[in-house]
Amino acid sequence: MAAGKRVDPYQNFSFRLEIEGIQIAGFSEASIPDSMTEDIECGEGIHPPDTRHLSGLTSWGTLSLKRGITNGLDLYEWTKQVGRTEMGKVKKNISIILIDEKGEDKARWNITFAWPTKYESGSLDGRVDDVLIETLEITHEGITRVK
Image (cartoon, rainbow, N blue to C red; front, side, top):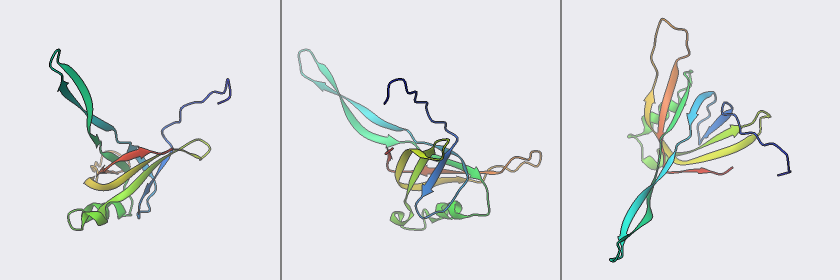
């Protein structure tokens, strides 16, 4: 990086999703799942007893997607496949791509072997004029930032 060149962090409002085999646009929110690796303490030695820390299993948080309800049923149909279809056919790869103000891809998270575990249609309320939001909770087997 050139001396004196400022690098600002990217804003979080411009992104897109790629869901394998599903063509959808217009997500208003996507939570990037966290990851956590278990810390395992092991006793070692006799005089004095020492403790070592080893890494255990890594687990990932849930991906949450939100968008205004449209006439497209792709996400809803995907949730209905779980439990009725062989899981190998239900799991999909998903990418979350952060876009800068010029429209260029700047960061990418690849989420592997994902499937929906919860679908929520939102709440109807005749007293407001908000967009009805559907939410999809997705479990997966790993996330990698590749860009």
